[in-house]
Length: 527
Image 1 (cartoon, rainbow, N blue to C red):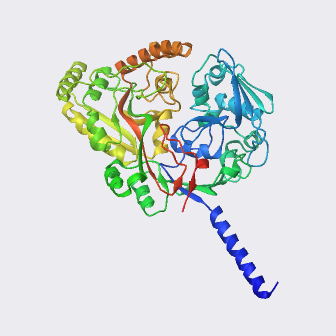
Image 2: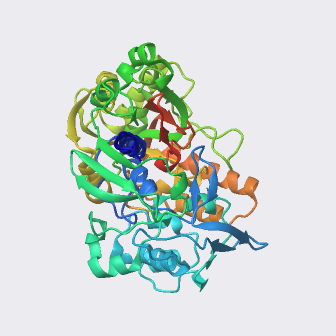
Image 3: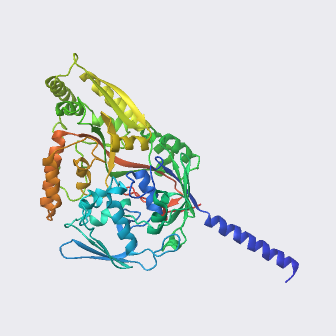
């Protein structure tokens, strides 16, 4: 080979290596609505965390990019005739990021950990359909209906048939843990450099208020089909800031949009603004343990005068729908005509008159005005909503103060302290079934019962529905429970969600869906 040929060959090789390096360095800069409170899958409770957990771990089953339940670690499964025993066949090539095989025993360990009262999992009750789960989680002892038949066969026995059980397993609470790492490091297993995960990505770094960096997991069983080299999660509680970074091409997606920006962004960015129906309800928790909110007449009066149509169109720019029920429309396994607040169709003037009468009956009015504090997590959308509602309450003689926290502190207060009068909350369905919304108000669900609701009749109806296999009969029981909820109104439904995303036209594989789930493993970036 001549010197010229050698140089040419070296140059070609260098250019090829540079080209391949550039192709492999696909980094997804992903806007997220805040920092996670935790990366412990047994202690997470928000969509902010769910997006990240979905990238780090893989459960028995997963949502694909269209929110369809598909195989995850389990490549197949069988269900017995009465729907109470699920047998999962785990794929042979499922591995942890350290190279260990993912076994059925790992899921046995993880499911027992979330039910252990010492873990303090606020969301453990989502898996109560598993036999023995509720008793264990409540400190009553017993044995969990989860068994490793061998390393690649997991058997889960349910207390009773649960039509939506596979969807439950797509939730972050069903994600596995690496037993050796948890046992060796305790709560520090979530730290970069320690965490061992089994998903498409691993945790490289976590800098609060800056970014979380995930890198591709070469031991992931489907790594060959993962196009991204890394994912950077950037926290944006200020949605407008995320939009600015998006327009500057510094992020490729934002998982929410400030509603006042929606028309302008749509006009300038076109199809990169993606608004999709979403299985969720935006509501206010009304603390029934505190006066004067403890009086149902006060709660109903406050609800009556809220112009939800105004909130949906003017405050949220058409990105939300008015809500007069807790369970959102379009949900599976429910009655054809779900219950609603009975003043939904009344003119606002009539509703104001009825509200004033209720307050007078409760002993409140100009001579005995009501002072209420609205708590919400920092966001222009939540601020504008609270301000508008305060204005609507003025004719009732209600004066409002505000308490604004970041998202982690706000939800920690709601779950643990509950020192609020009225507090902004939202619930996105983990699975498409009304039980997933109605269970929030059980007396034995303090982590999500932001209204401190305690109605044995309501709880009994949910228990009855849980033991009913016939779907139509079950739907009728759940509707009866929602009627009680709307009568007592411990939480005030305001709006039904739509998901609002900014999505770069360079992102491929990002599909709009009712659950708003977008695992990074399905996404690639085109030039």
